Length: 73
Image 1: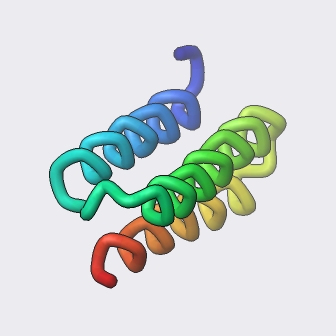
Image 2: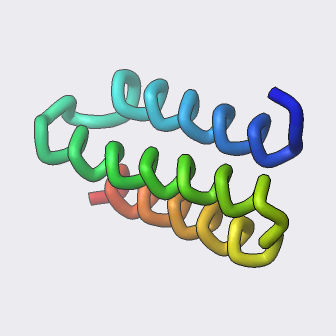
């Protein structure tokens, strides 16, 4: 983990895993939604490492927001 984006996105992914096992209903549908958020975090990591900091920040916030919406439903 060499950059700030590596740390933030991996931490967010770990948060997704914990949220899935602790706070969700553990259905396949919820898992698929969390996988989409995980893909967004991976893309945000690559975009941030490429130097596009604003786009990476927007993607990370979108991934976190989407995961929060999935948990609320």
